[in-house]
Length: 286
Image 1 (cartoon, rainbow, N blue to C red):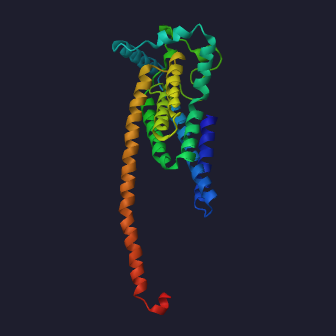
Image 2 (cartoon, rainbow, N blue to C red):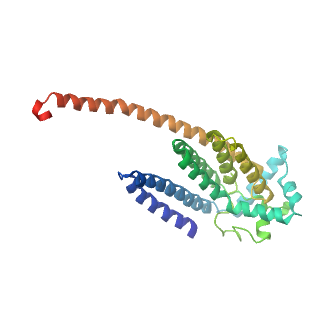
Image 3 (cartoon, helix red, strand yellow):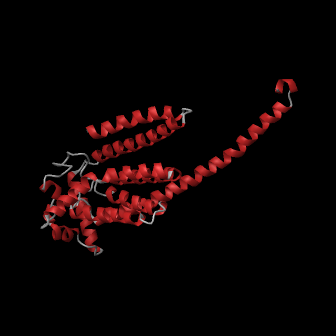
């Protein structure tokens, strides 16, 4: 697909060029190189995600069957019906059309804006949060290798593909569009939205930071009313987010321990060089 190929090529070029820029003595060029590397990594992650999601389209019947199983399991544990939520808004076209637009155009820009804000305003927090994003997305990709259809494909139950109905679908007919359609479990939309809200509330000192909580709430409403995800898709995504955050924290602890272990060695090597110089002929030392 052109989108993921373009992202992969641009991302690889950015990483190569930015790596060279990071080695520059000029501070602005080094900072630009660091930003370029991070941008290239994000684009590469996007390309990988799109590629793996396409690989998930292997069994149409399997995806429908798994979606039906999730629906039955949710009814067994008495979760609210996604169908009831959607039907309550079917008579309000402007809400559905706005939800379709939100689903199509807010997901990636929101993450991009969040990472740019974090890199520019809280550079010391960027790396661990970036690692959490990578771990969460990778975990979602692994689960998405098992094909699961979104609720909108269960037309026998009464679900409506609102985006297709209003001509706003980013998928189009089955098998086309910018992403695979049988990778509904877990919901990366929900996982990323909750991650953004959690990190903004945790990191930002602003008293207005709690407004970001509206982002995951609105995202959950959108993916439900458009029949793109079950409740379970979001629940699993949040569970994976918890594990990804723990993994990122653990990686940070290990990295810090490794750096601390290297510092004494570096100090001793400098001390050794000083002793060697002091033991030479005074004239040679000068």
